[in-house]
Image 1 (cartoon, rainbow, N blue to C red):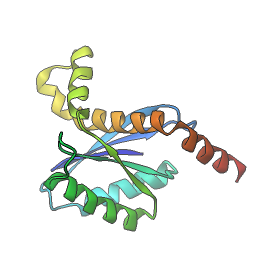
Image 2 (image 1 turned 45 degrees about the vertical axis):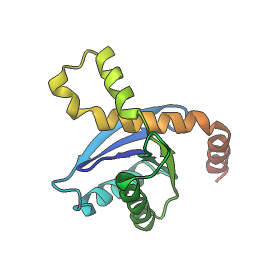
Image 3 (image 1 turned 90 degrees about the vertical axis):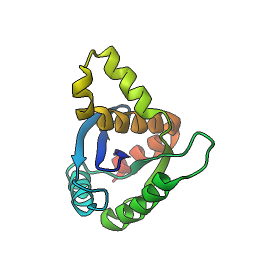
Image 4 (image 1 turned 90 degrees about the horizontal axis):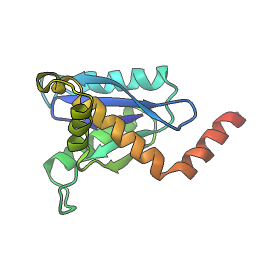
Amino acid sequence: MGLDLGSKTCGVAMSDELLMTAQPVEIIRRERESKIRKTLSRIEQLCLEGDVKLIVLGLPLNMDDSAGFRAENTMEFRSQLERRTGLPVVMSDERLTTVEAYEIMDRMEIRPEDRGRYVDMIAANIILQEYMENHRGELEEMRSAMEAK
């Protein structure tokens, strides 16, 4: 599972069973940034439904590699997510994924006024797909271990 945490949204993507491709799933919305319980509950539900074994959470680093306020909030969310789901949560650099998501929507000719409905979900998809491509060997081992059970 891939996640793109925003101030009031959380984009969600899932991999296929072969751990080859990522697909956008949904955007979890909340009224305020501090209202995170329902987001955690929905992620937990999706993890159970999708038999998730690993969560990839986008880490919003600054362009100079420093970790600002958003990165600190994301690290706290990671801790809550690990406690809630019992799953490992790995961090993945998410810089420029929103820019890339907008470029994808340009190519798909999604109207500008509709892009807010998709951007976080597409960004989550990019985060997960990049992680899968960069960790192919580890994922193959994970898949083999799951098949052996």
